Image (tube, rainbow, N blue to C red; front, side, top):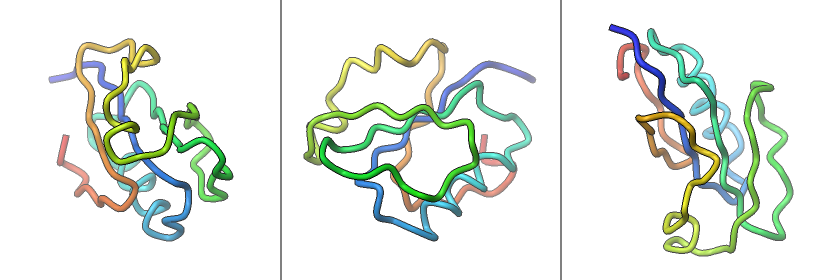
Length: 93
């Protein structure tokens, strides 16, 4: 089965190695996402950890504020919402 989905990650950009593990685990999925959209709090520096395909969107800081969004950037029917410290096994999706 194949389908298009996006991955959305909320972050302050300070998770370091945990964030890199999240990104790497997304790339290792048997069904890879169409895109990865990272919602980062305004005033924070983009993380140095990357896989090179992320799209960054600055949003107001706050646990609720960074989740209660329109998600206009998501263009797929399905969306996987993650925090910046989640590890997915390769067959999670």
